Each structure stands twice: as structure tokens, then as C-alpha cells.
Length: 508
Image (cartoon, rainbow, N blue to C red; front, side):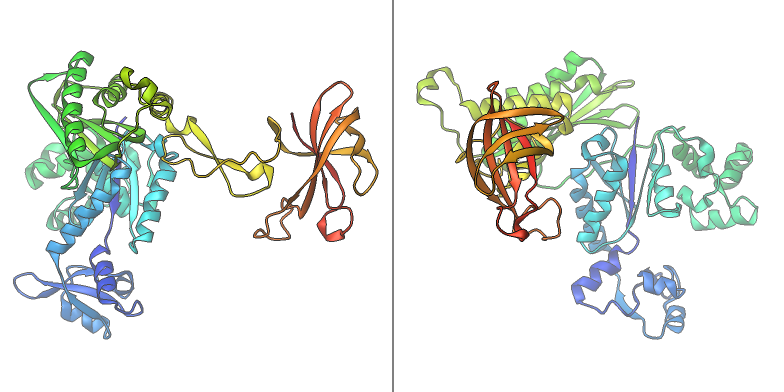
């Protein structure tokens, strides 16, 4: 199912100029241009719009409405360049991004949402990225570019997710301006009582086509998915990519594999010359109906090995629907890193073996490619002595292990999800437990080793219930030879250190 994101940035020109000129955010700001007869408003910030200033309005009228209006000259060429650069920044979401007019961006996110925690989370991250850049906007996702465009501009929410396969009646309440038609056409439709998309959809098509031309019905059909509307993606100028066009469309897996081998060889040669390796690749299939399909693969480390990258891409062919055929394929490296030399093990140099790390990265890449990044992870150490917080999950294909594991003291092979209280018989304050009861089972202690004192994290609040001030850990063995990891909360001398409760934390 095709899923298109529309990002609307109505304030991009004024937000860019405000930052560049360090203008006061308290005064309304607009840009001006000349329409051939007079000075008009090109863009207005939210403060100016709140006082009745809108784009296209005569500048003199706007200054009469807002006496302290800040006015700067519009820079349409710079605005278009900024929009194109921003579209390039959205490649983290999908390999298919393109400007939508002068104030929007289209992103073909088909099959990408699961990589970012779902569609709601993906759109939330997109808005958060805009906020960090000092920009504001609205975003929507739907089955077609026209539907996403309409909901981003005329929907009720700043973030709109239209379910896949939504009925056509979902758009009936939107104004006809959402169809991307000329202003005079929209005005005429309003005068005829056809100011909503539902009215246009229900009206006879032949009279509408005779009076308004074919564009009105084409836009309606594009919104409703009756007519395909392709997105022509843009890429950063320095990106490594390769493309193959075909005299006759192809649609078989064997043909796709042959083209993949050629594209990967060309891309890897370019990466090798630049001393880089791929971390993320996007393979785009351009279909004869003007639409595109894409697959994305990632790697655990920078790679420019054609065999490995070709295998990863070939494993994803089954997810591509070729439709009536594919007329071109394009491979782009949307994320790359410096790729340093790898030292071979001298004992295995003759076999071409690159070592355990390289072998592990190949395995990780294939597992992530088949199972999804959310199902494959590694554990990385955390700088703390508290056992249950000494490790955390991180994506397996992310470079770097994150820290150094310490094995200064024995640690159990299994920790409980949370320490469980036990009843202990022991002499305070320094003697080991003689017996303990856990889950109504009593264990007589035959041997014990300890204590090992672990202090809580001083940077966490003292009121944090999980941040014990002092723990005294013991390794104990019962008469059946089973070994447990117990701790007492507190040092047995100071009230602030803990309440002297005993807990079972793990098993050896």
C-alpha cells in the first residue's frame, strides 16, 4: 500500500529571515514582492496572520492593519533552495522526497513506517526535527499525494494520519482549494454552491469538465487514487548513486538481481574511491505507470563489499510489486561513513578471512534485513554500579559498542526483572545469612561470600525509590548446591543508608 507524507511549511521564508537578521519575535513579520502592479505580501508569520494579514494582500492594506509590521524583501530563489535542502534532510524517512510547490515537501513513506515506530511516531519525529531547526509546520500521511497535501493544509490537526484504504467520503468536508486548483476556479465553484469536495464529487462530471477544463477532475481523481500521481524525488548533489534505464520493462526477480549486481558494483567502486562505506542504501524501482517502489537496507558498519550489499538487496526483491513493469532502477547511498582499512588475521590471511568483527557485522546485517531493526539488538554497558541498570538495548546495526564491560566481581548469569523481597535469618550487621525464605520456600545456607558494597547513583534524586543508597551483596549457596545473589538494603549502622530489608536479585 502506498503511503505519502505531506509536510507543509507556510512560514519557512519568514522563519529563515527572522533567524538570519536576528529580528524580534514580538513584532509581526512579512515579506513583500511585486505582482506587476503593486507591492503585495509574499509570506506572513503567525503573528501577522492573527491580525488579518494574508499572502497576496496589498502591502499598504497590511501596513494599515498592523502599523508596526516588519517588512523584508522576498527571496524566492533562496526559499526554493532552502526547501530543496530540507527535502534532502528528510531522506532519513524515505529515499523518495520532493518539494511540493513553494511551501511543502512530499515524502513517499511506503513500507518505511515500521522502521520508525509506526506512522504516528514517524510524523512526530519529523515535527520534532523541524522544531530543532527553528521551523514550524503541519504534516499528514495518506494513500495519495493529493490526499496528504489536502489534509496537511486543511485538516483539523497539526499531525494527521489517514488510515490506509479510507473511504472517499473522508474528504467531502474539505474546501475545494484543497484540490490544488487556481484561485479563480475555486471562487467560481464557491459561487455555484460547490465549495466543498463532497459537492464536486457528487456533481455530474461532463458539465464540470466543459466549464472548468480537465484539471479540476484530474486533481479530484488524483486525490481519490483513481489516477496515479508520481513523485519525482530529489537527492543531494554529492550523494553516491547509480541508475539503469531499460528499453523494455522488466518484472522478474532474476532480471532485478542482474541489475542490482551492476548497480552495486558501480556504487561500491565510487565509495571505494572516496574511502567510504555504505551504512544505508535505497533501491528505487521506477514503474511504467509513473509510480515508484523502493526498498531500504542498512549495515552495521561502513561497507563497500559488492557481494555483501548485493545479497542484502536481493533478499528484499520479494517485497517489491512491479505492477505492469519497471522501466528504470536507481540505487542511492543515503548514508555513508569513512571506511578505514581492516587488518586481517595473519593466521588466516591466505583464506581471505577478515576476522570475527567483520563476520559478525555480516550476520547482523542479514538478520536486521530479514527480521527488522526492532527485533535485532545488542546490549551495551552503562556507567553505573547498580546491576539492573548496567546495560541497555541499542540497535544492532548502530556503530560502536558504547562502553567497556567490567568483570571485577562475580556476577550471576541471570538477574530477576526486579529484586524480590525475602525473609532472612542473619546476625547483624556483618554476618552472612544463615537461611532465607523466597516464594514460600526455605533455603538453608551452607556457604556464603561477601559482602560486596554497592552504592546508589549520587546523581539520581534521593527520593527515587529505585535508587537505594547502600546495598550489601552476598553470594550464598544452599545445602542442595544452588547459588543465589542476595543483598541487604543499608549498611546496618546508618538509617539513611536503607531500611535493612533483604532481597534476592539473581542466580549463579
